[in-house]
Image 1 (spheres, protein in one colour):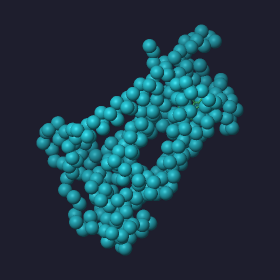
Image 2 (cartoon, protein in one colour):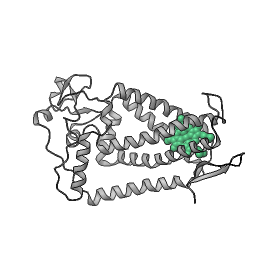
Image 3 (cartoon, helix red, strand yellow):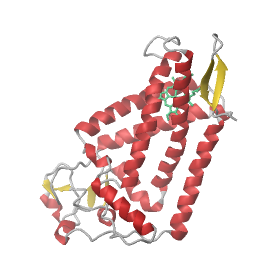
Image 4 (tube, protein in one colour):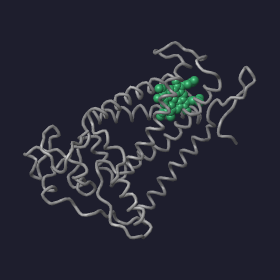
Length: 299
Ligand code: HEM
């Protein structure tokens, strides 16, 4: 049982043509196992989260009732990406498990949408959002060390609350970047193998070996995305994460959830003076800062 399928080229060379399709089931089972183990762990074994001391009272008092988290543009990007990603997964893998239809056209159209969406996201996140908010920082690393030590019963002070994104989310984003860029870069070249509206078909662009390896990378990253998207949807539906999912629909999260999980000095919320009362709602376009220095986004 090999992980790749091979063929013989017209020149007698043995070349990989794509991944072995049983890897689809490996990914689905790996995703399901992760969900079962995680849900069991959380239900029966995990201790309540403990964080270092809360932010100063005057800082907490100025957090608005609705904490802006994702701008409209960021939310639109997320849902367009989600729709194209799910279309890509279903069009790619349903035919491999017996559901036959003319999948290639839907697939490359969804691929083109995803490619444009990701190009847009890179520019938007670099120029308008807080680019660094999604990359691990020194505090994340230090807190991860503390969390691991405490997990194994060793002494360590409690970790600080999170910035805008917990370390786990930042690492997930990193893995998605790797798989996403792999399917996009290979997918754009693979469009030369089929008829699209973008450029004339040219299957002779690369050697058989290069094409084969490209299909393998596309397939590997693709099955990786099956497990990753399963995990992402699972977390999005977990009751304790619903506040985050809701923020991807409405753009804001509840003050209580924000204060429970986030450190106002690490994720600085901009508020208007009118939102200094805890019961008023916030406007992301106004200017006074709740805590700390440096601008962070509401995006
Ligand atoms: C979630 C993301 C994606 C997944 C899971 C995925 C998966 C797949 C799979 C399994 C195949 C069959 C390959 C084979 O026979 O070895 C395929 C083919 C293809 N993919 Fe994707 N893909 C994704 C994203 C993309 C993107 C972003 C593009 C374009 C930019 C793209 C363009 C193509 C094209 C043109 C083919 C057809 C190649 C052919 O029939 O010769 N894919 N994809």
